[in-house]
Amino acid sequence: MTTPTRALPRGIRNHNPLNIRLNQANRWQGRIAPERNTDGAFEQFGGPVWGLRAGAVLIIAHYDRRGADTIRKLVSIWAPESENDTDAYTAFVARESGFGADQKLDFHRAEHLRPVLIAMIRMENGQQPYTDAQIDAALVRAGVLPPGRPLSQSRTVRGGQAAATGTLGAAAIEAAQETFGPAQDALVGIAPYLDAAKWALLLVTLIGIGVMLWARIDDRRRGLR
Image 1: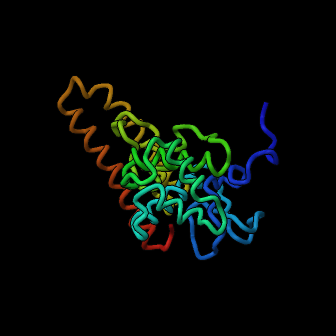
Image 2: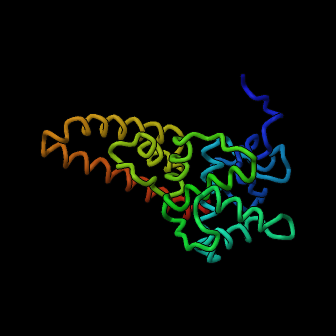
C-alpha cells in the first residue's frame, strides 16, 4: 500500500530530506523555483536525488569552510542549540553512523559522508526511505564516488557521472548515459580476455570521470551549488 503524500514527513514530501531552509540566493541544482515553492520555509526539489545531493554538498561545504570535521561540529552548525536538542541529535547521528561524536572525519570520502548523511536523514524524518542507488547517484552528483565499487561495474556511478552534467540539459545527460553505460557494460564482459578491451575500458571510465569533474567546475562558474 502506498503511503499517502500528506502522511509523509515534511522533508520526504519536499524531496529535501535534510530540511535545508529556503534561501533564494542558493541556486541549488534540481530545486523548485522559489516562486513555485509551496512550503515557504524549506527548499523543495524536483526529485529525491537532487535533495540528497544538496544535503551532501552542504555537509561538504561545512567541512571545507567551517571546519566541521566531526559529527559534533557538524550538528552544532546544522542543528544549533537555539532551535534543537543538539546533544541528542549528535548522539543519534553518532550511534546510527557508527562513528564517535568527536571522531575526525573527511566528508570528501564516501565511507564517512554516506553513513552520516543516512543517519541525518533518519534524524530529520524518523525514517530513511531511499535506495542505495539513489544515495549513490546523489553522492556522485556531489562529486564523491561511492566506496568499494569499481566504476566499471557500477551503473549507478556511470549514470551519476553523466547526470553530473546537469547544466547541459536533460538531452545531453541521457545521451551521455546511453553512451558510457552500454560501452562499459560491453567492455567489462570481454576485458578479462583481451588486453585491448582493458585499455578501452580504462579510457571510457576516465572519460566518465572527466565529465563529472568538468561538470563540477562548470557548476561553480555558473554560480550553481
